[in-house]
Length: 90
Image (cartoon, rainbow, N blue to C red):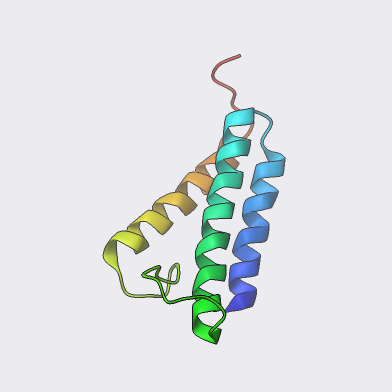
């Protein structure tokens, strides 16, 4: 499971580095940092290093709004990668 999360985060950083415009680059980095925060907080709670909070594990824990938000964020990342060469405003 951790290797899957590592792959998702690495792919997100690859997408951020592939974008030429500053907005997709910053938004991609923000999405990766958000996922990293949720993952590390949940793992820290599981092994007892951090206090228990209400953050669900992305793509795994039960929670409709969290799952929708995570999938929406990942779809934004994929959209940035698909349209990385199209610059609308210059």
